[in-house]
Length: 200
Image 1 (tube, helix red, strand yellow):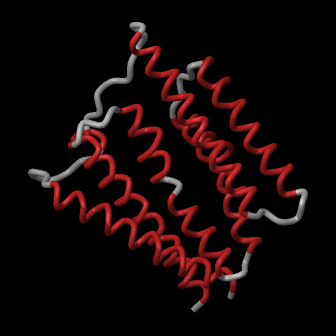
Image 2 (cartoon, helix red, strand yellow; image 1 turned 90 degrees about the horizontal axis):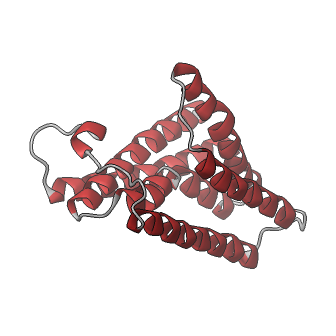
Image 3 (cartoon, rainbow, N blue to C red; image 1 turned 60 degrees about the horizontal axis):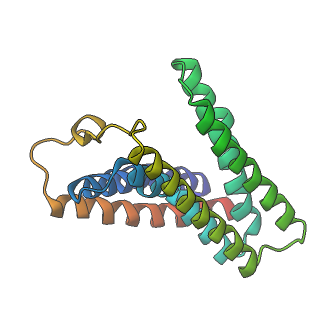
């Protein structure tokens, strides 16, 4: 039974995250939100929602090892596994300036977590510091990218949701909202199943 809960939780997290991101990106595109803001907020945060739900659920259930290990393990897998496999399948062109800028911040965020974890407890103040750090970075990045676009720099191409997110027939706002809400529901339920199974 425990194995089925873990497997079912992982599947629900996968499909819930997929539906959540698709619905959010389609709605953002319909409302005319720029590709930059879609990438920074909806896609970036949407793909992290399963980790957020899983860690939050684990913390509430008194399993701090799962809450922290989920985040650390996810970041390690993103850099070494996901990026590694993607590069093996197809070489990835890198903007050196962007990689240096964001790579330094990624390293700084990892060191900040390491320093805060030395106290043995990640409390509300620690969480607030990390959250404000993210908000400050997003604000700085948005300002920098906007300034580059206004100065005649290269801007991101318009989002082609029909190509990136295939959708049969005509789309409606109601269907996109249903996708978003359904994705959230599946993600939350999947997170609960995964945490309960892992604790067992």
